[in-house]
Image (cartoon, rainbow, N blue to C red):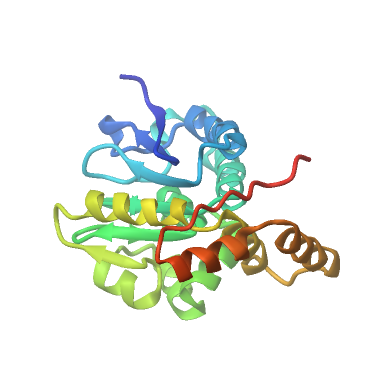
Length: 252
């Protein structure tokens, strides 16, 4: 099978699978280019409440497929930036499910997700120093915000891989699961995500990205007032039932 991004939507959960088993799921230029429009389609799908990004088989993603490049690696790394930013800007919760190697561009994609769950034995690394590549300002800032400056410098300066214990301790991953337990936990948690208020999640994701301008604060206050999310949530709590949240983003 040709390298590709597979995807499916089931029960409100979109799953995107990085598939290039001959190269440990390394991303080809075509795969980098295909990710932003795929994410746009999934973001616009009202049936999608959360997105899971994972790799085929026993590896998440080994980075860029250097052997497939027809130009200099420095030029081609520019393909990763739109993919990374599209993933970071995805308006619904995103979760990277990581097993095996999560290296280079693969770690770049995982860091752009909201959350990362990993299976014991996974290995993480940011490797531009091994190739003489200048890591982008946006990618560097995202890594620093995630793990702190000390760990970010360790990863960027050395290109060394770290294990799940250190990744968990430094905040690079949120949960570590025993072998064989990743898929079940990810499925369970993704169902939790799609059961929660999309209004709360969308506003929180925007606010977490940086200081909110006054007009955006006013926008979300208006959305909270116009929606019936809080009334439904409180009623469900008092009635001891599962809430039926129904807010969707306004058109345009």
